[in-house]
Image (cartoon, rainbow, N blue to C red; front, side):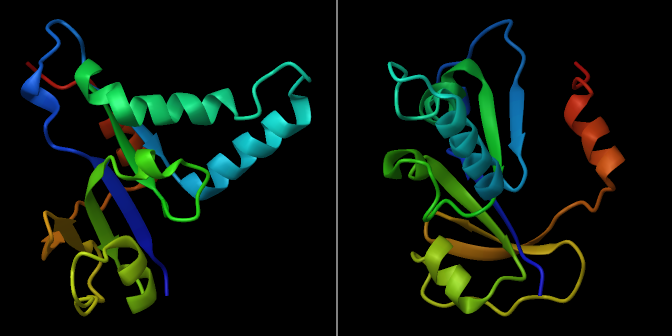
Amino acid sequence: MTSSVFLLPHPEEDDQPVHGCPRLMVVIDRADDTLRHLARYWETFRQEDDPKRSPAIAALEAVLYEGRVARIHVIYDGPTTGSRLIPGAREQFATVILARVSAGTWQRLAPIVDSAPKSSPLPGRVHVVQDGDAHPAQVPLMTDAEAADWLTTPAAG
């Protein structure tokens, strides 16, 4: 069984619009591995007077806290529980998208919903959890090249 977990920041991004600033999307695939490698790298090269915490991980947490004000949004693929993020950073995710996950994973990532809905074998079918409710949704299926093109092409208008 394969699983995908995408966590999105709060939808209040336009409460304080930043005029003339493009909207940026930071996509972190396999975030748990990425954070582990960043922490290991920092442990290897950190000097005695450097902070113990990886500056790269601290910067990600800063973007999670304040990025929406600057129109920076994070799509985070991976679990936030047991990760190297501090608990407050994990709480910045208001939307959880789960696809083909076990009941245990569901309880860990979406505990506000009583029971895990039945997974669909159809490609692109997910459950979106927001404000304590879960509902099924269809996501676009893209190749890696199509996704990269979508992420790097500026929006028209």
